[in-house]
Amino acid sequence: MATRSRASALDWRAWLGQARQQVPWFISRPVGVVVRTFQFYSADNCSIYAAAIAYYAIFSLVPLALLTLSIFGVFVSREEIVDFVFKQFALQDTASVRRDVDRIVGQAGEFSLAGLSFGAIGLFWSGSGIFSALRRGLNATTHMPRGRAFWQSKLIDLALVPSVGLLVVVSIGLTAASRLAIDRAGDLGVIEIGTGTATRLLGIFLPTLVSFPTFILMYRFVPSHRVGWREALVSASFATIVFEAFKNAIALIFSFTAFTQDQAIYASIGTALVILFVVFLAGSIILLGAEFGRAAMRGDETATEEGDAVGQGDGVVAPG
Image 1 (cartoon, rainbow, N blue to C red):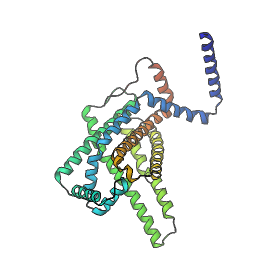
Image 2 (cartoon, one colour):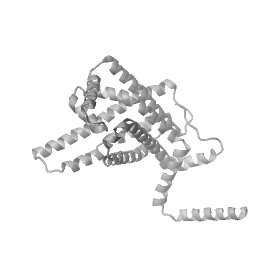
Image 3 (cartoon, rainbow, N blue to C red):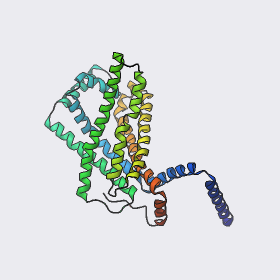
C-alpha cells in the first residue's frame, strides 16, 4: 500500500514537471518569481519583522499627534482642526464633547517646551524602533551574516526618522499644491478640466514621485549588505505598485464604511486595531519588495542556497 502511494506521488510529480515545461516562458518565469517571492518571505520570517514595525508604530501615534497639533496650530485655525477631528473620528457631536476637543486642541497648539520635547523624544524613539525593525527585516532578506556596528545601525535608524518624515511632508505638499492649482485654473476658466477626475488621478500618480525613489534608496542603503542598483530598482518598482494599490484600496474601503454614533464608544479601540493592521501590511509590502528583487535577480542562486541549507535551521538573519 505504501509502495503504491509512493509510486502515485512520483507519477504526479513527473506529470507536474512535464506540464511546467510546456508552459511558455513569458508565463512560467513571472509566476515562478512571484512563487519564490512568497517562499523567501516565509523562510526569512518577514512577518515577524512586519509585526515589530506595527508594534512601534502604535507607540508613535501619541507623540506624532502632539507634534502635529502644535505645528499645524500656527497655520490652521483652531475651529478647522476641531472640525477635522470630528470628520476623522466617530465622536458624538455634542456641545460637551466639542468643548473637550476644542480644549485639547487649544492646549496642544500652545508651544510648551515640555510638550514639544515629549513629542519629539517619543517620536524619535518609536520612529527609530520602526526603522530598526525594518532594517533587521531587510538584513534578513539579504542573507548576509555580517552586520554593521551597533552605533552605525542606530545612527542610520535616527537619520531615517526625519528623512522619511520630510519625504512624507513633500508628498503631501505636492498633492495639495497640485489640487490647489487645478481648482484655481478651473475657477479662472484657464482650462476646461474635470476637477474631480484630475484630483483622483493626482492622488494616485503623484505620490509615486516620492515613494519610488524612497524605496530605491531604502533597498540600496539600509541593509548591512548593499544590493546592486538593478535589484534595488526591481524591488522598488514592485513595492511602489503594490503599496500605491494598497493605499487606494484602503481609502476605497473606508469610503464605503459607514460609522454611526452608536459606534463612537469603540472608535478609539477600532482605530488603533485598524492602524496596527494597516502598518503590518505596509511593512509586509516593503519586505515583499526586497524578496521580489532577490527572486527576480538572484532567484536561481538563492534557490540553490536554500536547498543546501536544508536541515541547518530556519535561515540566517543578519544582526542589527
